[in-house]
Length: 162
Image (cartoon, rainbow, N blue to C red; front, side, top):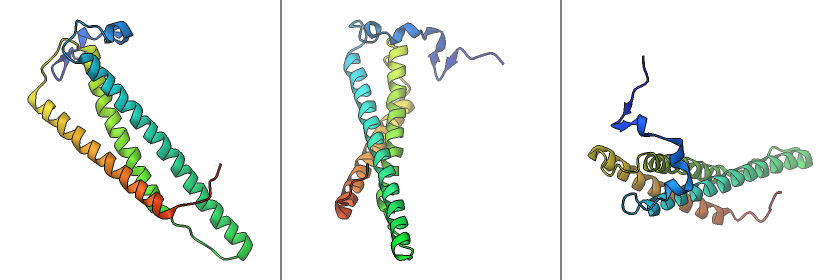
């Protein structure tokens, strides 16, 4: 089966690696607000990458804290003690999930904008889907950040593990 020349209405023969050069990406000849959209997509991906990194580090520290407390209590008292940070870990997993979704959506938009700069119209169903997904994922990420912040403030762990 030969490789298709068009996927979802995008002509793959127009795609060139040179489109990712800085001077080609930010060329002033392309449609209105292209430079600003590229900047916004990169900014969204960078913010989501930072949130994912902080959630991963925090999740790792809380897992390590839980393990250390349980092992210390077992060696000192001989009793099995449990430390529950599952609500914090669940909030961090939500943050990681929504960050991945947002980075995927805006990464796709970035690549499409770079590879097909002259294309200004997309199918209506794609536009509606993109807008709905962007709004739902942004609200989800905001709620995950709020839940994680509230849980962290409720726990207020004074011990920092390095």
